[in-house]
Amino acid sequence: MNDPKLTALFAQWIDATLAVKLPDGIAAFHFNLYDCPDTHDVEIVGCPLYDPSDSDWACDDIFMSRKPRFELPHDIVGQHWERGLQAASQMLKTYLETNAPGSQRMRESQAVSVGFVDGDLHLLWSR
Image 1 (cartoon, rainbow, N blue to C red):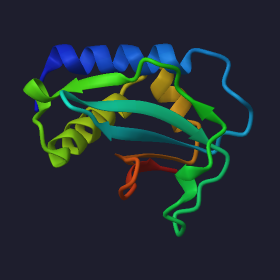
Image 2: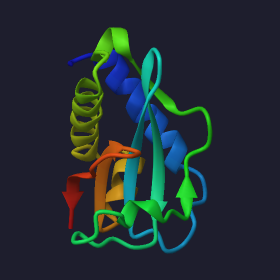
Image 3: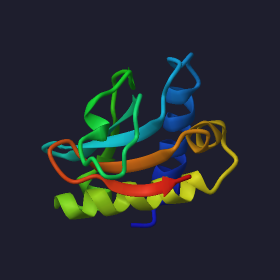
Image 4: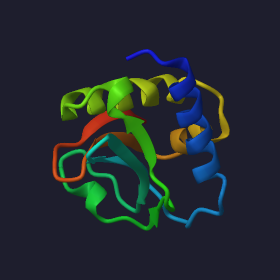
């Protein structure tokens, strides 16, 4: 998946989402993925703890992005969940290498991961 327009919209969504006053104490960020009929939807959560040995660290959140979630259309990224995960991971890795405000905010935390809500966490960045 290499769609520059979707990648740019994703970056704008992250920046807008993280531009609000965030709660104190966010140790790490996780991007939840949801498999929907025509899209893979994305939301951001901020978590008070990060423990690489605990696969449930992202279940306890103190921040959750407001609706609407960001949509990764199946007709662009693919219908299967693996394609949605791959697209979100690729766009997030690219975004984390920028100096965008949201990227800087996430790199102030201990870690950033992505994964489907009932699946495994995939660590994309850690301090």
